Amino acid sequence: MVNNAKEQAIRVLHVLPNFGAGGAERMVGDLVRGLDKSRFAAMVVSLFGPAQTDVERELNSAAIPVRYLEKHKGFDIRMYCRLRSVIREFGPHIIHTHRYVLRYLIPIREYRDVAVKVHTVHNLAQYEVDTLGKWVHRLAFRLGVVPVAIAESVSDSIEAVYGIKAPRLISNGIRVERYALARLPRRDWRKKEGFGPDDILVVSVGRLAPQKNHILLIRAFRRCCSAALGLHLIVVGDGPLRGDLLEEVQRLGLADRVHFLGVREDIPDILSAADLFVLPSNWEGNPLSVMEAMAAGRAVIATNVGGVPELVENGETGIIVPPGDIEALSAAIIELATDPNRRGVMGLRATAKAQTDFDVSTMVKRYEELYEELFEAARATQARVC
Image (cartoon, rainbow, N blue to C red; front, side, top):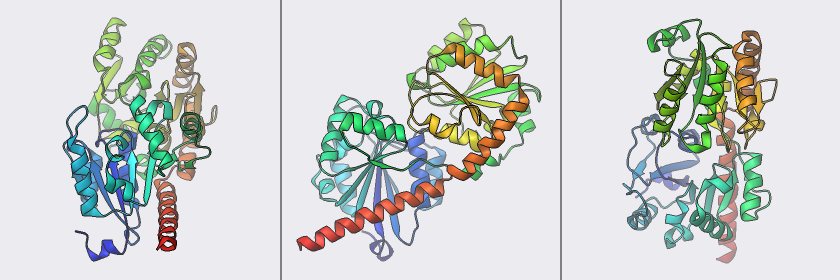
C-alpha cells in the first residue's frame, strides 16, 4: 500500500536489469534521488539481486525503496508474476524502463494499463538490445511507450532503427562536484597504489567488453612507452574480456606498465591522480565516464563515436580520434603525455564545460518536466473519456 504523501505525488517506477557499475545504473540512481519529493514518489526495481554497489547504498541512504526480483540468468518466466505484483502494490502513474527489461513488461496487462510509459535508450539503438529486444521495443513504441534519447547520435539511431523521428532528447548528467573534489589527495593516492609523483598516468574507465576496445588501447599504449618515460596505463572496470586483455599485456611485455584495478568506487580519487583520460570505444551513447573525467579536470582522448563529440571539443578539451585507428590513438597519447602544459589547459577548459553543461540537476529537471507533461496529458485524455 502507498501512504498519503505518495498518493499526492506522481508515482514513478523505474525498472532496470541490475545495479552493475554501468552508466545506466548510475543515471537511474542520480535521477530518482534528485526528483522533487514533494511532486514525485519513486521506486526502483532490479530484475536481478543486490550487486552491493555504491548506487544501491546511496539509494538506501536516501530512503528510496528498491525491490530485487532475484532473476536467474537467461529467460526467467517468474519475472512476469513478480513485476505484476510490484505494479499492483506501488500503483505507479509512470513506469520508466531501461535497457532490455521491456520484454518482461509488455506481456503484463497491468503494465499496459499504466497511462504513461517511458523508456530511455542508453546506447545507440542498434547496439542497445538483441534482435528480440528490437522487436519488443518496436512494438512497445507503437503501443505508446515514449523513447528518450541521451544524445543526438542516439536520437538519430532511434529514427534509423525504429522509424521514430525526433524522439525526446535528455542528455545524461553527473554530480559534477563529486568528481571535482577528490577525497584522497593526488600524491597520497599515487603513493598508496605504488606510483611515483612524476609518473604519467593514463586512465581508462569502462566495462572490459568489445564495445570499449581496450585491446586497441593496450596496443596503442605499447607504442607510447618509449616516447614518455614513467608512462603507466590504469584500466578500471571488469568484464568478459579481462582474461584476454591480461594475456595481451603479458604478450607485449607490459606487465609493469599496465595496471588492472577492477571495479572501483574511488573514481574521483583515481581521476584526480591521473594525467589524462582515454576512451577508445567502438561505439557509445553518451558516456558518463567522459563527463566524469572532464569534471575532474582531465584532458580526454576519445574516439569519434556516439555522443562523444557532443561532450569533447576536439583540440579544446581533448582530442577526438577515429575509432579503430591505432596510429591516431597512440599519437594523441604521446602528444598529451609529453606536453603537460597543453593537457593542463585542456583540463581547465574541460572543468569549465562540465560545470556549465553536465550537472545532473539539468537532467533531473528535464525528466521532471517530461513526467509532468505526459502525466497531465494522460489525465486530460482520461477526463475526456469519462
